Image (tube, rainbow, N blue to C red; front, side, top):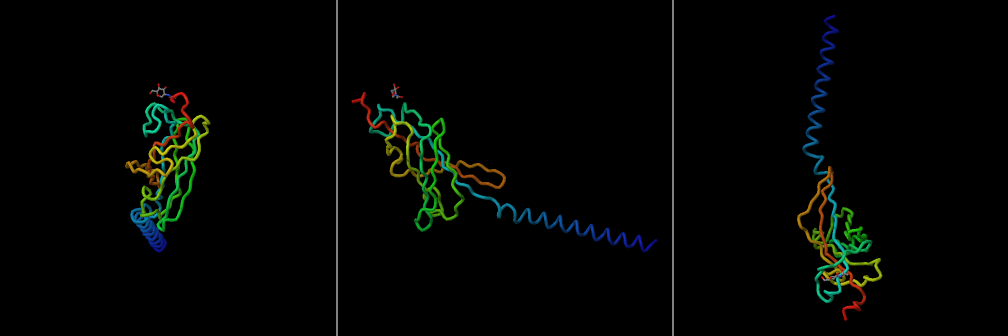
Length: 177
Ligand SMILES: *[C@@H]1O[C@H](CO)[C@@H](O)[C@H](O)[C@H]1NC(C)=O
């Protein structure tokens, strides 16, 4: 009987030790490994596309401008060797707003998406307003602006940059001339 009690005590002690060890290991890995190893940084570019009002043709003003739905924009990003590493197209929603999530890329030019990427106007579905303007460099390439906008999900660190606003213009503003 005593031997059995001793055996149970030894088995119990071993189990307890194993449990304590696993808790210690789990606690250690949670503190030291999980966050640093698994957080993924996602770069997002957002902006709005307009149709410039004919009253402001030739300027960069977007006063009284209407937004353009289903407009296409292209995001291009360069890598550390100045080579193109990302090319992504995005479309605006009903409010003229676009949101392009880029693949997580660790080797942006100068390590900075704001210096590595630019946005260009690609196409407007509105035949009455499909001439791309260079307002905010929508024709030659609009730089990304880091306005400190961030979103954090469980294991995602989302960095939201903005570009533009960009604008198309009517091919001609007959009534204005
Ligand atoms: C352009 O702007 C003028 C004056 O600000 C406004 O009256 C007009 O409705 C605008 N045109 C369009 C197409 O929005």
